[in-house]
Amino acid sequence: MIKRAFLKLAGTTAVAAVLATGALAQEVTLRMHQFLPAQANVPKNVLVPWAERVMEASGGRIEIQHFPSMQLGGTPPQLIDQAIDGVADIVWTVAGYTPGRFPRAEVFELPFTMTDAGDMSAAYWELAEEQMMDQDFADFKVLGVWVHGPGVIHSADPIESPEDLNGVKLRAPTRVTTKLFGNLGATTVGMPVPAIPESLSKGVVDGAVIPWEVVGALKVAELVENHTEFEGNAIYTTSFIFAMNRDAYEALPDDLKAVIDDNSGLEFSRMAGAQMQSDDGPSREAALDAGNNVITISEEAAAPWRAAAEATTAEWIAEMNEKGIDAEALIARKDELLEKHNTQ
Image 1 (cartoon, one colour):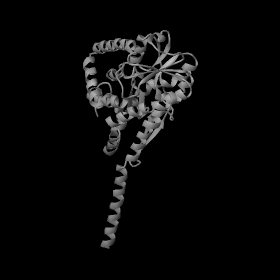
Image 2 (cartoon, rainbow, N blue to C red):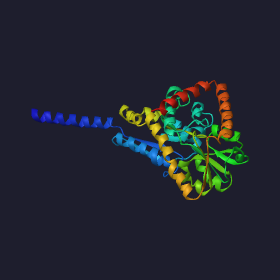
Image 3 (cartoon, one colour):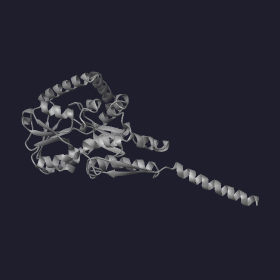
Image 4 (tube, rainbow, N blue to C red):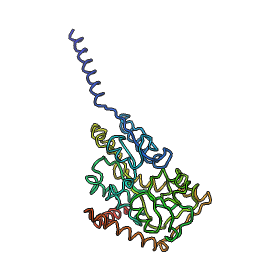
């Protein structure tokens, strides 16, 4: 009788333990939303591998569903608000799709600053931790921030000097690049990346500034034949935000928060930027193989381009100072962090 009671008690305890373990082993489904097709380089080589690492590290308790090409609805400029409002749990977006909303992040888009996207992305993350998380990025959980490789001008007609941009309708991605290419003489047109192919084919724009890595996915080298790149520092780059709804993050148990955190942050940001720059090569080679014209502006020949760039930076500094942001200090700290990460 005593033995039977003991076995019954032991069985009850075991069931309770299983139920308790099941309650603790919370399972979560997160929706990841972004603007490029699934086969594009960033989803294929950065976002989906990140999601796979998180799912594996969670032991299957986190499921991440990927919605490419704005499949959850809305437009690319709405992505950041979708993360804030919970329309999506995780988004990847261009910071400049909402002009002026993330002013401190623009310091990484200033012209002729970037040479290595991985190093600059690491600097971006560190400066974001220091000065942006409680200000620019206060409304969401930041998983990563990074920049792409050297920006390139892709155009119907050859662009070899600033004079060649006069009257050219040129797609630009962000507020800073719009100002830069406007100062260089172009008629700038703002639009998200997915709109570029149709705009080129219909003559809405004569060219676009994007990195090589996305040229293949957008088939830009089939729509224009000329590509202008720069030796040394890039004429421009664009900053990205990989963000999570804060409530979705806070609702996770501590061990799953740790899974998210362990797969995010500085090293992930560095990897994402480096991966984007690495993915420039195949698209560039494909354009050359197709017989397209790749124009390389030497550092010496870039002098007139740099003059316009200096004016753009000066305008940006004045605008930031008007907003109460010490732009000179921000630039100085960015430069310190770039030097730090360039030596690693």
